[in-house]
Length: 251
Ligand code: PGA
Image (cartoon, rainbow, N blue to C red; front, side, top):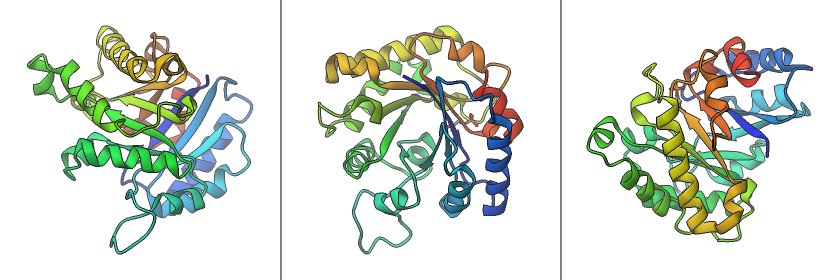
């Protein structure tokens, strides 16, 4: 199982900036991308085409969408369909990112609809879960992650190809704050995620990737990537520059 090194560019970069960063990353990775790592760039929709062009035919690189609406097509002003992402060359998409849950008010059930719809339309789905600082202080980490996963995966067929389903554990208090969960916290949360996957999918869950996200940077990436049940990282801020993201990818 390759480690998935995902760059979530959020609402940053004009298309020309995205193209330049993707090109710089491809250049930086030439000949040094480890065999066991896959690079995933998740740019804003308006940059998908430019990034696709920059990474086309580059082995080990993939493109992903940050979001979509769980329907094939229709009168959904401002939304984008999963087939529009695959048409642009995306092989992955995110669902349940904390910014969408907390700023856009997405519910667990809605996130679950996206996960199953994306899988049906051929996307590899990355379900993001994680607790807020208050939930952690109240000792509710297990409850929150379990609820997000149970509802987020509720309709996923039990025989889903394991490489197409990924869970990203991203403690909300560590996203964009510079605070990173410590090794003990990451180990415990990832073990919990793995056990919930095993309960639902049986042994196939051993082949499902669990990513860590939340202030991953070149200085802490290698320590995080060595931890049990960490099968990659989902990086925001430090993925915006080709220089820092390439250091993370090769960490
Ligand atoms: P960050 O974001 O690396 O800037 O903390 C991670 C994420 O939101 O996926």
